[in-house]
Image: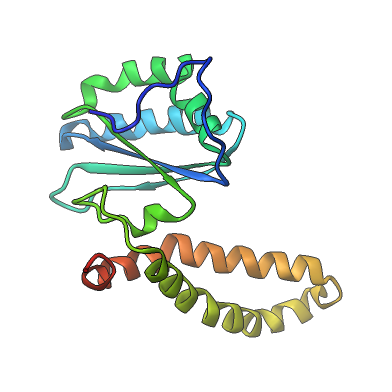
Length: 196
């Protein structure tokens, strides 16, 4: 059963500074090809909604059947607009036969979803551990990436455009943190992160 309750149009929903909507689907291996086709419909549909900031699909490892989709919205209210939309309900109705069980939904403020233990979704790492681990990742990257990119900036004449140079550096750092480094690092340090 979903961990997010439906929000009526007249209800007041607090606006946060960015939220991550985590959607989990269990899909039988025989239905995974059809599910992938369905994802190609629902992902662009969500992207049309106000406040959408991106999506990441984590596909199951061999022998597993759980897909995890992280959808980023600029506020909780805008995330609920998508969740409760007729378009999403219609697309969900088309896919229900593909699911092994009902979808699971979780909503996290900021970067809490990185620091939530999957087997126990309500168990979140303490803020100081989140801060320490995130700083330990971003600090060296903000020093290393500009050095590695400097030759390219000079060849492409970006050295005279500090805004473009900074934007490219930030985009690369954030991409590495979100998609490559942080998911693996959280998994490796889980015993420390979620320990007492």
